[in-house]
Amino acid sequence: MLLCLSCIASLVMSQNEFRVGALAASPGTIVSGRLEVRPAKGIDDGTFLPITIVHGSAPGPVLGLVAGVHGSEYVPILALQRLRSDLDPKKLSGTIVMVHVANIPAFLGRTVYVSPGDGKNLNRVFPGNPEGTLSERIAHTLTEQVILRSNYFMDLHAGDGNEGLSPAYTAYYAEAGTPRVIAESRRMAEAFGLDTIVAFKGKLEPQRAIWCGSTAVVRGVPAIDVESGQLGRAEPIYIKLIVTGILSVLRELDMLEGEPSPTKHPLVIQDRAYVKTQTEGIWHPNPQLDAGTYVVKDTVLGVVTDFFGNPIVEVRAPQSGLLLILIETPPVQQDETLAVIANVRPGPWEAN
Image (cartoon, rainbow, N blue to C red):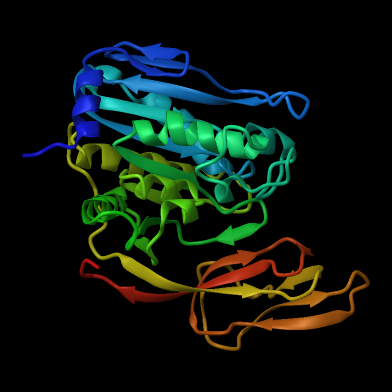
C-alpha cells in the first residue's frame, strides 16, 4: 500500500515528540496549553488558542479537531473537554490535536457569527493572513499549525445562539479535492454515525475555500463538518453525539481499538434553499414550526415587522423540504438568512 508523504511524516512523528507551537507531547502523553496568535502592533493584543495534544504510544495518523470557530456554539467546545478526559493516550495509535475554542474573542464576547474585535466571521476568512486582522490571523494560525499538520480533520459546530438546528448532521465536500480526499471525507462522515449527511456541492479553488473545512480539503486533507446542538444551549444529548461520533471515527481510522458505529441508511442532503429577507426589522418565526420538521412549499415561516410591530413582509417556504435551520431570535438585518430548507432523499446512495 502506498502512503502519501504527509502520512509517512505523521507515522515517524508519532514515534517521537509531537509539537504544536511551544507545546510538545511525548508518546503516550496528553499535553494542554496555549497556542499564541501574535499581536498586531497598534491594532490589537493578539489572542490564543487553547489546545490539547493527545500523542498516542503507537504510530498512526494525525486527527485535527476544531471547536468554537463561532463563539456562541458551545456544544462542541464542551464535547472536546469531555473527549479529552475520556481518552487514554497509551491506547491511542497516532495523534489528536484538539483546538478547544478557536475564537476566544467571540467566545468571551458572547457574539453570534462574528468576532467583536474586527466584525469578521472567522469561518469566512480562511486560510487567513498572517498580517491581517485578528480573525484572519487566527485562521492563518489554524491553517498552518493544525490543518496542515493533520491527515484527517473535523470542524465542529452547532446552531449558533440564534439558530434552531435539527437534526444533527455531518457534512463533507462531495466535489472538492482529489478523489481520494472526497472518498476519505465521505468515509469519515459515514463513520461518525449521524443519520443525516449533507453533501456539499461545487469544486473549489484554494482562494475560494474560505471555510475552515474547505481549506483542509483543497490542501489534500480529508475533512468533515459536524453540526450538533442549537440556540447556544449546552444540552448533554448533543454533546454526547459529538463525543460518540469522534470515537467512532477514531475506530474507523484504526486509531482506537474496537468497532466503529457508522450510519447504515443516511438521509442525504444535496441541495438546500436559503430563505433571506430583503429588509431589516424584527423577526417573528411561526410558533408552530421548529427546525427538523418537514414543510411544504408556501408554508408561512414567519413575519418580519418594523420596530413598532407593523408587518413588513410574510416569509414563505420557496420549496418543500426539511426545515434544517430556523432563526428563532428577533433581530434581522437585510439579506440575512432566516431559514434553510433541504431537499432530502434516503440512502443507500452512490458515490459522486
